[in-house]
Length: 405
Figure (cartoon, rainbow, N blue to C red):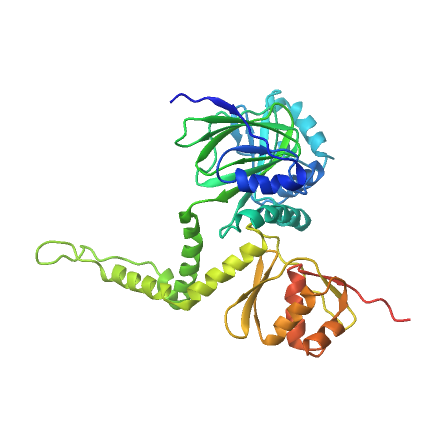
């Protein structure tokens, strides 16, 4: 069947847009949601994130695509100290001799982990959608891109993932080709719009001028969870059998039965038994629960920013819970707590009373008051251990006590 172009559907504006999108279009068809609920990033935020990524060699890599292909070492073409704004950076590249006035596209994969305020705003925007369609059990990948007059010439994208693209600045055109349909969708979006297409699609992006986007890819197939399961099983296998890192030499020649058929080497049979035994270990479920709790608290946005340094607390420090704390029970008195992508184990029923005190408090409370309501001493190591992790994960904001008169 010959492909045809179909203009994008447009959903209702603002408050009802996200719900209507979730109920009508999510995972069903390509769509543009105009004036979508705010992502929380503006061009200044995008510029700061890209500057940070360019300054840290251990950050996720930056890719600069030009008319001649992807530059392996963009060097001075990356955002630098002289670029005071995203507009200034775009203007500089427009006159860069090495680009010859052609279009370009700078892309950073998973770039938010060094900027907690930006990460948390994007996490909150995603959480608004997940409340309607369900929370992802596997990580979602974010990609920040800025470009000018760039047209993709080869289809890209993971057909196993759905896509959400917020247009931060400028205008974006996307040609989406869902698999097995014979239909093409031409999606045209401007700043403030959200572009979506379901899993099983390929796409071509086109920027007629300066345009900044954040794209989130959401794995949508059952096999997407296999890496998480493999990671959990592998970690437990290494713990149970440290010698698994020792190189294995299979016998040569391979053993054969009397009828000439090859026999299974003992090393492989032993590995199969080790794998089966590990799967039967209840710690596998606990490891997967811990991974899920962290992802749930991050709305799937991974990697999360590193924890912040611990703050020594006194009884007069004031505390305020500023984000949701996920609690997953793992025993009668044991649980996992998670916040902002970080997970830690807690023990004892007093921990639940501490969490309840923070959940039901909509204003600051002192360490002393929280201790009193939880039945603990304000010097209790157990209390301070709980608060230390809550502070390090940024689930709780701390205000120093006012000086005594």
